[in-house]
Image (cartoon, rainbow, N blue to C red; front, side):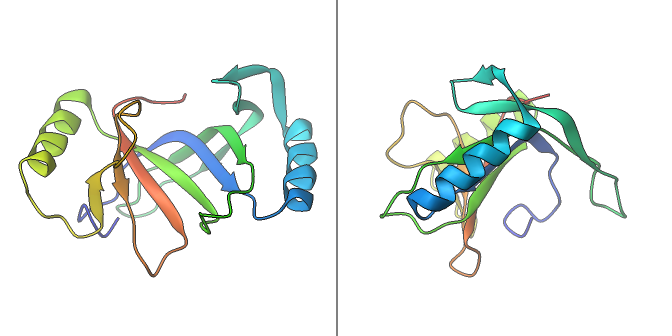
Length: 139
């Protein structure tokens, strides 16, 4: 995690962003095979039947993904997906406040134009995915 200077634990969800209707239809059918359609958060994050677990390696923490989100095509966004990271609530509040007060962290900003979502966005022109830091887990 270049912006934070260390690897953060994941919150437990992964998003895949579709670029056209055919890709969305294909990935939605695939998602239906790997997730419980009756167990979703916000009607779009679906619990995987079997979580994806990646063991820890060096200073990279163990990673468990429990939820999958397939996003409909959006012609204004060309990213391929996103990952949410987790910080304890007090550490998250401290980081967010420092950004709001003008601290500059390359590739990190309080999520713009979405007052309904309390997240810090991680971005890079060299990476076609977003990262988000929040204070909630998806386990």
